Amino acid sequence: MTLRISTTDIDFGERFDALVEARRDADEDVARDVAAIVADVRERGDAALDDYTARFDGYDPSSIDRTIAKTARCMALDGLDDDLREALALAAARIRAYHASQRPEDSETTDDAGVRMGARWQAVETAGLYVPGLRAAYPSSVLMNAIPALVAGVERVVMVTPTPGGEVNPLVLAAAELAGVHEVYRVGGAQAIAALAYGTDTIPRCDVVVGPGNAWVAEAKRQLYGTVGIDMVAGPSEIVVVADGENDAGWIAADLLSQAEHDPTSQSILFTDDAGFADAVAAQVEVLLDRLATGETARQSWADHGAIIVVDRLEDAMPLVNRLAPEHLELAVADPEPLFAKVRHAGSAFLGRLTPEAIGDYVGGPNHVLPTGRRARFSSGLSVLEFMKRTSFLECSDAGLAAIGPAARRLAEAEGLPAHAVSIAVRLDTNNAS
Image (cartoon, rainbow, N blue to C red; front, side, top):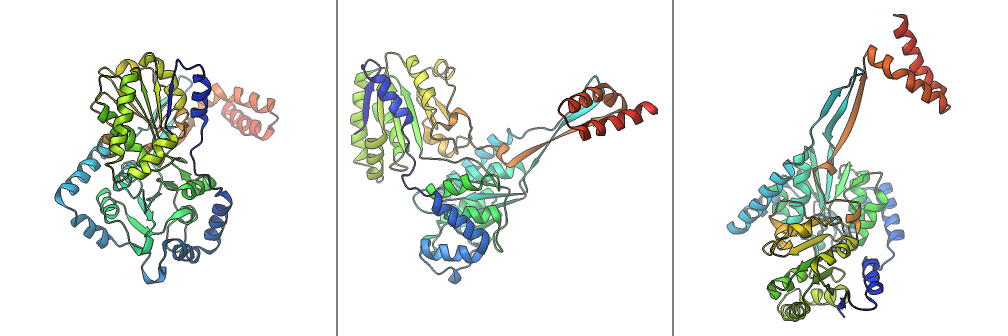
């Protein structure tokens, strides 16, 4: 049953604490199974992929080429209705423009001691993109993951996606072609992440792997981090809406269900300062649930993980929002800036009554790949930076070495590292002799 609490309740603190600490990740203990799959792919490569494809996707992989050719992607793109193609193109353009502004610039300076220093940014060479093939096969996610990599300057963007029964979602292929993905392969699950991390005879080894997936995919990314870079270990989707009674209750109900319909483990939470409005939203949720094709999923999510929280003032909600550190945060008020100023932990914020989170999922521009499960306390959404690394550099002139070398030598001696000290001393001695 959907949680309904008020800050005036005598047990509010205890019940809100339970809401914050509740874990919604999949119940299955998948770590051992994933470890076995990863080890198998590392050992047997493509042969292991063939076995898992036959087992999980239900077809003989020898009957279909693992590589999805560019001609197939082009046909998928050409086959789109004009309005859908235009919508994808608009989304791609806005995502590309937003992420172009994230590219960091090289830096260089020479300080008063005569030491030159700075940093140079470069893209990774190969990036892997995981795209789910069942419930969460979303072309928008292809754009959100591929475009930042390409904006960063990644030379080879490789996409993997499961193809149950050998079928692939044409919208996913169209989005991959529109974004500029270089290669696409028919493989999914933890085995796909292992293939991207280690490489096989077919699939190239990647430097970074990004993209959403189920519990097995998330666990594979967690286990392989260090062998390969990852974007994040994402959990079920979530939204927090802060809304006053001046909103349309039907609008807010739709916003809450826009996340609930993703998965039964998704979470939707409303904060409001108007108890009557809370009742109206709850009623509208029930009306909308009966109309949605995704109603069964959304109903389970809303019943098991949804919450309506009544506060005295909306300002009182903001410390509670920060404790939740939500993936998505809507501030549905006439003037959202005072509330937004109080936001410390959120993956992405949507400001005002006319900015539903769904706009951000598709055509807003900022990335919709965001930290979940309170991870917004310490991490951010996917950006160009996930596909780039910084190399710092340092160059000492004669004067620079003379100015800072003695201090470095003294610190090396204090740390008990004589070779460090000698490597500096011999240069200082030579420099002094000249």
